[in-house]
Image 1 (spheres, rainbow, N blue to C red):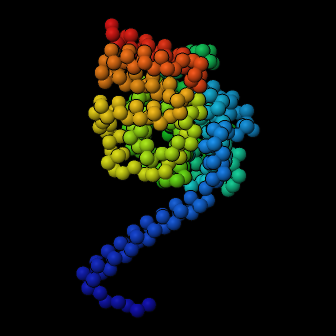
Image 2: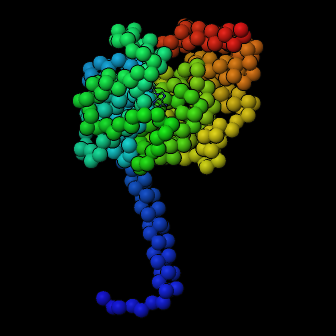
Image 3: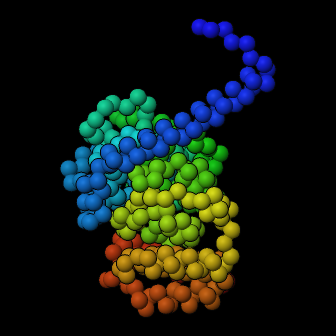
Length: 351
Ligand SMILES: C[S@@+](CC[C@H](N)C(=O)[O-])C[C@H]1O[C@@H](n2cnc3c(N)ncnc32)[C@H](O)[C@@H]1O
């Protein structure tokens, strides 16, 4: 090895060239990895899902055994995505796990998937496992368990997911204080965007890690009336998503196709939309859907009108939508319950 005598300045310039080269090489390797993943995508499964909106039929019974807030169809979807679509290129996120129904659906799919064993647990499960009024009532009705608001229900989750523990990396605690520090995300299942803050945090932490052309994104609260920030932000990012199945009961299933620009993402994270912009975004979200799938987002528009313009505007929107949608022409299992909830919220706001 020849011994080189270089001046300090020359050494510094050489190091900076090496560093620059290593960054170029790293970016190039990332691009190659991403194109290889795209080429390996299980496209037949994707096409079948998009066309029919139906999912695996031979779902193991454990998937339906856990009490939870997901329908059988939504569990079939999660199981199928994990079993047939997941390539192992990134992590799987289950944000909002409750008693583990979504966790077990995804984990069972991962366990039944053909392919190599996992080096690290691929499934990341997020929840603070704390009882609120809604969960308390659900627990009492479905499992006859009486707990107080603020108590933990972690024991129930733990028992349900036990057979799949080796596949799960658990993030217990307030999601608002959690950071995503790992690498790419291949399946992003969201059932936790219950406030604008949680929605912003999820977009900030997880969205930049989705893999264009490969990752799938499921928003469980899409066909739901109370969380209009979900429709506003998803519509603002609509060029990033290609809808695969508009409605799997309350969920929407999308493929992530384009990364957002910094400005687009920032506008969603800071929710910097004027009232007129929010209205235009939710209107365009409604129009994007097939007519039979518009009902619940139209209800969300009534809730948005209530928060932006008050009681009269919300009542007008509710009357208009009820003249178009009724139980017979919307496919949603909770339609009548949701209409009543919205009606009540609007009525209460006038007292
Ligand atoms: C509708 S439930 C999820 C249902 C679940 N995916 C299932 O399969 O039944 C929403 C979950 O989000 C959790 N959650 C709400 N706010 C949270 C927060 N700030 N941090 C962590 N988890 C939260 C709740 O504890 C609850 O379990």
